[in-house]
Length: 400
View 1 (cartoon, rainbow, N blue to C red):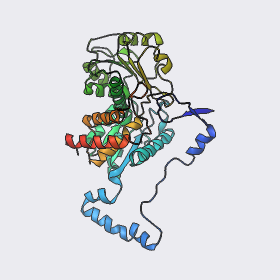
View 2 (tube, rainbow, N blue to C red):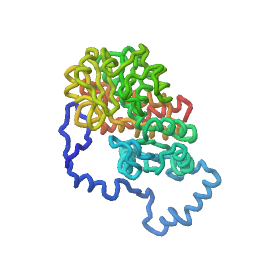
View 3 (cartoon, helix red, strand yellow):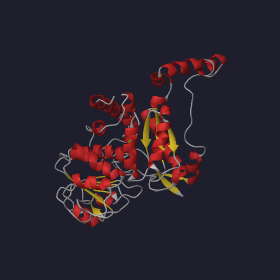
View 4 (tube, helix red, strand yellow):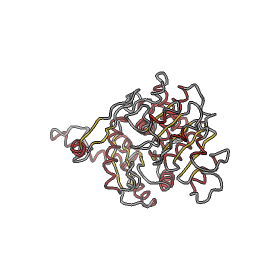
């Protein structure tokens, strides 16, 4: 068995690195994380400082002034990656234990790209209130919450309630990480084509976590004509069977009141963003406007193969590393959380997300081309730029 290894994004398609099953399982054996002390324990004096009796002085001080925990523990720099395993990658509802390798990987990315310590917490419950209660009780142990791979529409309720229940940054990365990078990529694409965001007619296929978040951030960035579709077609006012989230989106999208499916939505459209497991026929893509932009983000199989889409549109991006223009959440979340924690932010605001997208775009704005509308996920400039922009936005928003 062979699989494709994610690699850096290049200006031209890269040949996928082939990994054997033995290599994959060998690398995961025993897990991908460990804890290393930051202070020496080499002799009796060091042990007395790090543990008893010296540690008692620090504990007494924190007991007298709880704010000292920020200085003398890792709490306020620790991100917990929280999942119930109900919407994992392309695997779906596989449960908390099977999701743990993914959450370990996410924690490793936080450390590598954001310099933040992180631990995975997989919870054996899908009840929103139970998850909230668990995280509220654990609040003294961490500084921020990254929600991960939680199914829609519960993810919307969970994130909203957690933001209100906790006094620290909370972000569902499947929603907002995807949205931030998609906006950054769209900024890059329109810059290459010397266009503006506002006049674009944008179609988003998928009204789950990522699709709704992409719609909201694009509207906030100035897009006016946006159509959102789910498995039953275009979301519009008065459509039967909409859940509350989709009802909300029906009020702010589809300004021309279109009804029907993808064929109706894409005819004459400037931008397609795919965040569903569906497929898009080539003949429908061919009906898009001249020099259209296609982001086919489903993994491992994009909604339309990039080579096929490129015959009809001007710019193509995917979520894969073996094609140009990889839209990857790792461009966003390490810097977003780093910036929020650097600023001491109580929450992550819409302005902070928009600032993150601007920062990602800013890294490559002088290097743009049809095959380079976003930086490589491995570009070392990205996380520091995003963190600085997010911290500034937090202070300007008054949440720092």
